[in-house]
Each structure stands twice: as C-alpha cells, then as structure tokens.
Image (cartoon, rainbow, N blue to C red; front, side, top):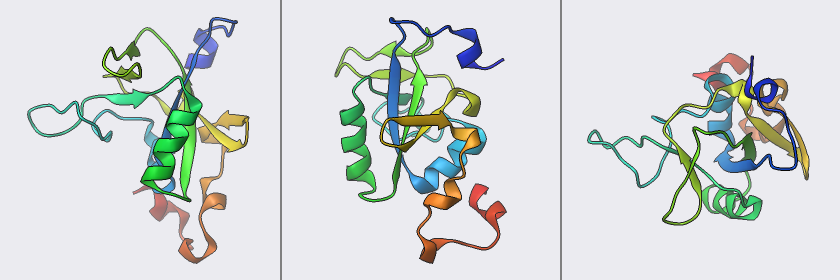
Length: 139
C-alpha cells in the first residue's frame, strides 16, 4: 500500500517539492529518493548526506532545479508525512528516511502531476543524448 492510499487528501494535505536533474530522476524512478544519494549540508561522519531536502514552495524548488541543471531538471512532489520534519533553519523540510518511488509524483507539464513510476523519462532526454539500450539509464 503506497503513501497515497494511506493518507486521504484533504484541505490540510501539504505537498512538498524537490527538483532534480533528469539523469538523477531515472534512479529516483527506480529506487526512490534515498538519503545516501542526496546532496546537502547535513553530512554524517562518512561525508555522505543523511537527509532528503524538500520545500513547500514550488518556486523555491524550481529555482534550485534551474541552478543545478538549467534545462534538464524535473520537478517532483510528495505528500508531507510525520517522517518529514520542518527544518527550523530555513523553513524547508527534511527527512532521514528514504521515500519510495510509488510515493513520488513528477510534473509532466505545468501543474500536471503523475506517479513517477508511470512516466517515461526517456521521452524527456534530448535526442542527441538518447541511447538505444534504455536499461543502461538505470545503472
């Protein structure tokens, strides 16, 4: 049972946003948002990030995506759960738990969202960067 079945949407439901480069979106589609893959300031003693950062402000996430990868970033969203805490420093949110692919939606056009597992990211890859063997995208 995924997150969207466990939480009934109502007027108090909050979506949180995350922007990611297209090449990272392929891994997120297969494995979800993973704390050991995230990049940020909250590092453990191995130097690996232990948190996933999200924001309730769509435009803040979009600005981050534009800075990371001007053309080829994807907007993701998840429902806020008890595992996702407000970060008192800048008002954004963070979680130290992985977020499963089935709990993530991707923006396919302005304001239109679909589960990331139902979307063909290959279609968003620039033609000159496409490879014939799609399985190589998920390594």
